[in-house]
Length: 188
Image 1 (cartoon, helix red, strand yellow):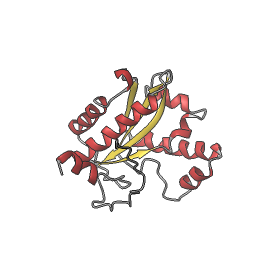
Image 2 (cartoon, one colour):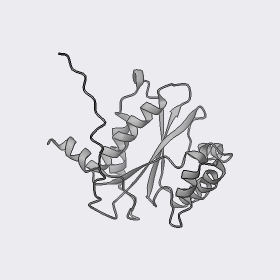
Image 3 (cartoon, rainbow, N blue to C red):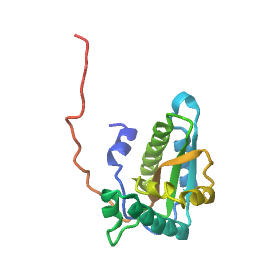
Image 4 (tube, rainbow, N blue to C red):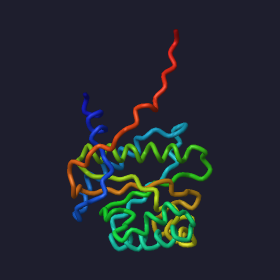
């Protein structure tokens, strides 16, 4: 198996991080990988807000919990109601990826960039986790305030976030993968 496939096969969603901040050089490598992701018609209509301020992340979590509880989404409410809940798992770095509202492909483009971040992080032995539970915050009244604070362009909307940090736990087991989800259509 080549090195790229090895990195993909060992990548896991990490939910426990060391408090040490990741190195700037590593962060820049990960962000460069995001910028190299494919985008529809190569328009690159994305934005990456990098948060490395613990107090801000902790305040966001409080507001995320409030927004989720007001959303009426029972599944997410159950998730944020756990006593040890922290939306970003106390990761020292979080990247919020936003896309242009005018592009019908923003979710695809931002998702491709997020996947590049996840793989690049793993290649550098940095833990990562794709985060979606923060989205109700940006649908709430406080969402616009956070967009301004994070310098997210006005005509963009958050699509996903990635938590990054050095792993506090190694050897996270591979969750079972469904094998019956592939179809082949071949000639003759």
